[in-house]
Length: 178
Length: 426
Image 1 (cartoon, one colour):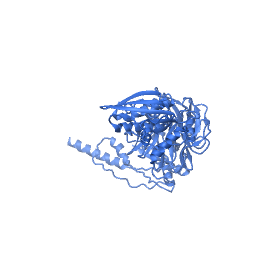
Image 2 (cartoon, rainbow over the protein chains, first blue to last red):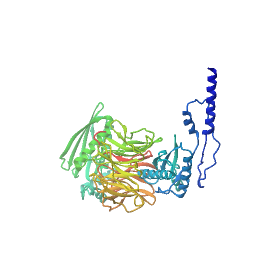
Image 3 (cartoon, each protein chain N blue to C red):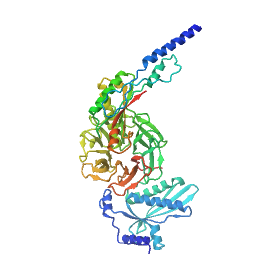
Image 4 (cartoon, rainbow over the protein chains, first blue to last red):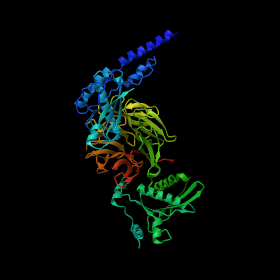
């Protein structure tokens, strides 16, 4: 009886160790401004505060959300939804990360600057999010991994009313879904 | 002689000489009929044994209603008579009509008796009783005003209408409502999320709007009887820019479920969808003609957003606007002859109207501010819209030709007005 218990404990410990060593492959791209899309070097894995790991296999799924991957926004010209060369570069990099991390599911948010009407900007934001999605799908990403949502002009990054703020606000943003 | 007496005498003199409405008003009222002049309307002091404050309040609301209707030259007899020291009504010289009223109060109940008579003949046009509770005093006054308008002009007044809009409340953009005169603010939702584009149903019983409550821009209906929202469209992507058909049986809307924003019509009872547009460009923001036969909408198929017309079945698409590089938010007038919309001019957004034949473009707002979401009053004589002309976004109302601007909300963060039809209850 006692031996069984000890064996069981050892086995579970072994499972935890092997799992922890191979599951923590962390890719991180810091948001970059200016330069084109070389991925930033991967920082060391951040240790999560795991204490007692139950033998439950569900743990693996929840623990994996501790990875930190950040997808950079892409930007658009006024009243446009076609992708700029720079947006294409950034999306190519996003596609690479998505291929390396098949567990990641994305919501792409389409946003606009404050100029123009609420309803038309909703449609414009939708087109921007879809343009980004279509490009990723062309790179071989399964469309079922990507959801789109348009916020029109309702969620600006920068609330000011000037060219700089408008340029930032005309964007597609990539949010990892859990 | 003080100023008031001078002004009063001047008014009486003018009236005695036979009143002529200024040229601008003539233009304004041409929408009603050719060569129409404002009717002189004397509002006599209201009689009451008690509660003089409430009595004055009701009278004040009615004077405001009748002024805002745009049909009358209001003569406040309480002021003129006091000023002249005249004990009679002093109405012999006036051609027009007179409103007299008496009020009685029993516990919580108000009884308002209105006598409308023709001048100078003093012939009775109607005598009518309005009853209601103290707390609905404003509504009582609005009902009486609309009745006066109806008997004198032959057209239902707009005092028993309301305006719903989107109001920023904390993190949420919520549905709210005010009376057409700006009184009685009331919040309709407390969702804490983004709600957009409300449209009041032609029957007045519900409001359709876009809501992010389920993390997607879905279409919801708010039933006004119990303030309960329910979802009527949850297609993937956009469920936006709803527009009721004039009979209230259909809703035109924008869906992007097939990959691209297109205009569809939903039969409200069955939720059955019919696709109207089919084009790789953006199509959005439909609005029905009052006869329900045509729809005006926005498309960027030419490279910039412009207004287009089509049959209600989706055929016969033709472009309506050619001036400017951004024309959006069309709203078809209930009178059928004009379409209000938002147009970009010099980097700013302004309210314009254009005839349904694409002629006679009128720019109604001006200056270094943005003006959006035009919507018509049910009688087509007024336009409500949102503007940031004083810094913050608030709701404003103007006449159909851009005159007589008044500010309706003052709290900021208010957009997207939608005008109710005439309502039978408060």
